[in-house]
Amino acid sequence: MKAAMIQASSFVMALRLAVLVVLSMLLAPVLHAEGHPSWGYSGPGGPSDWSGLDERFQSCGLGKSQSPIDIRTRHVRKIGLKPIVFGYTESPAILANNGHTVQVNPVMPGHAEFDDISYRLLQFHFHTPSEERVDGKAYPLVAHFVHENAKGELAVVAVFFRTGRPNVALKPIFDEFPLRRGELRQLPVLLNVAALLPADQSYYAYTGSLTTPPCTEGVKWHVLKTPVEISPEQLSAFRKLYKHNARRVQPLNGRVVQAN
Ligand SMILES: [Zn+2]
Image 1 (cartoon, rainbow, N blue to C red):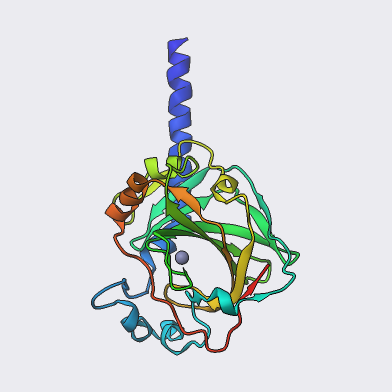
Image 2 (cartoon, helix red, strand yellow; image 1 turned 120 degrees about the vertical axis):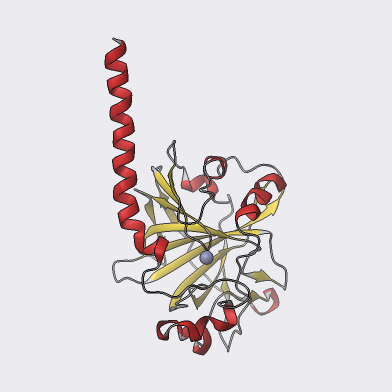
């Protein structure tokens, strides 16, 4: 009886190890950014240096529709944008400390529909303070949910966090933070990604870029208006790993922000 139990638990451990090995192979490019020079948020390699670090990073300096932006609500155009249809599923997930943020990679994440087009959720990660601003104001933290459609086009959903009560949906992630850069950890429970979203999912929309090198443009941004809460203790747990990992706001260059 006991031997069988030990066998079963070592089987589960072996399975978890195998999952971790396969995923670390898949995530190797994310973690080591092979062939990419190192970039950061301050000093040499900071945002003003990004475009000069690699010719693939030129958009960071030359791009005319970069992210993040400051959303001026007075200038927002209210039109009949369709609600985002979230179809996230509960999933095992791998956490990666990639040297720039903590990134969560759900294994079977589900999808979201933007304007009737289905996008698969690839990963989400955090920035402190929030990169996007609303009327000049930043929130203490933002999560970016990065999606890709069948054509390889990207769409991101930004969810703001304001300080308040502990965020129960974040707890399993924050309990398993990979502390060392390059470290991966498997979440011991299924992750309920949908539980991270606010109940009111109305949003601002505009076209921008990745906020990190290579700053690729043509990214469809959806910034949810309603923040969710995070406790000061949870916020400081993230800031122990990353004190400041936000790019400053970029010029609009005539872009119009829409809202529903
Ligand atoms: Zn981001």
